[in-house]
Image (cartoon, rainbow, N blue to C red; front, side):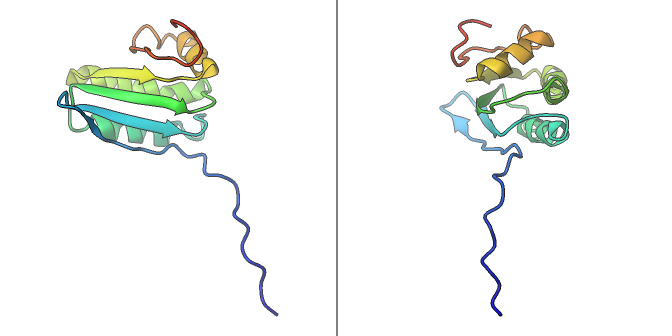
Length: 124
């Protein structure tokens, strides 16, 4: 008896890394997607640290496809910020959804990160 085709399953919620140079500035763009919580903080940290590994002058983290950031998930950004400071790299967060921007403010990261270009929040 033939087996039914496999179901497509749930959408992947793991952060993804898309890196690319922007112009001649040497900025690296990281586009994350999916929810970032305790289960995904370590993987997100690895993605961000990988982007920082070449010591670029700027790293832009585009959060337009991150609908939720938990307090535990912010650990990835604390880890990346520490490494960015050690390397002399400017770490910027852009296009954060209101909940994500609010969480960054709540844990004190919005003052440490350049959080320009937030979605629908005005200035953080």
